[in-house]
Image (spheres, rainbow, N blue to C red):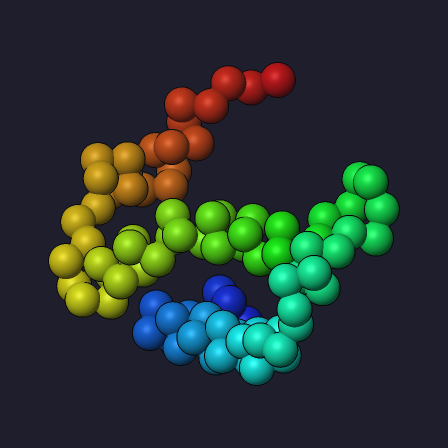
Amino acid sequence: MTSIQTMSVSELLSEAHTISDETRAEFANLTEQQLNWRPGGEQWSVAQCFDHLVTANEAYLPTLESVLSGNKKNTFWESLPRASVRLGKSRD
């Protein structure tokens, strides 16, 4: 597998789709009871883990798709060189 730092947006999306397909293949036959079973009071079920991953990743997909389609416009802050951003940080 390629390092995330060197992957293009299209490669990242392709990898995400592959992972999604593999996950469906692996977990599609679990019953509702199996998906919701929790090994302990403070531990998450398989369904809770998937819900968390889907919710967390939903925020990234529109941006990735926008970059891939060429419609992504940098914000003011994204356009600043990294050195400029560092100048604004306080020194401890």
